[in-house]
Image 1 (cartoon, rainbow, N blue to C red):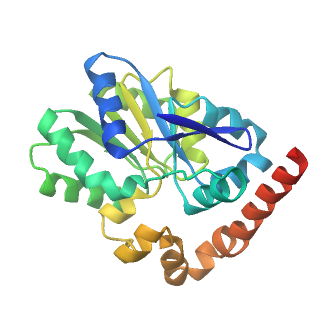
Image 2 (cartoon, rainbow, N blue to C red):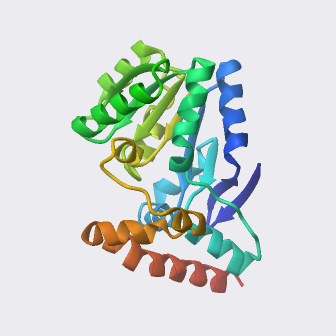
Length: 243
């Protein structure tokens, strides 16, 4: 598993099969790990919220997500770095959980969305051990931690959006009694059928963000139309200062 630096944030170049092995080892050996991801959006946020950088670096695995990161490594470090989007592998992973009898708890989204997402999961994987679920709009207090711990899941998916999910995992990691705690972004909206993936060719080329922008121009205007050029500006400025 290769490790790279984007600014001062450590990111891991890891494939889905390798990550699956890491998760399996953690569960079998009763270890405890937290898995996150970094994309250009989180890099930009880390410039505003300096403690976010430390939070991201404390994750055991922080895999590369977002075309902007791969482009920046290639342009300025001459590195060809691979990335992967967890959403692409979510159903494959849930199938593995069902086969290996791993239990999983879901946190995130609003009540209607996560209820529908969990229902879809149960229909697709009838033998999957769903330990429970909670929406991410209620007050995320210690009752959430207690609810998870009572269920004793092997895996906890936290989909609260960034950087809320990263801060929540960091704050509660020691209190949570499960082996694998993973940030999963807005995955429940896709599972529930309330959000749609871009065409395959856009996913492969790393431009699925453009599909999201067309679908929801107001919601994603700042993140993509302003955010992507600003991210590239930060990268160029950093490289110039570095040299």
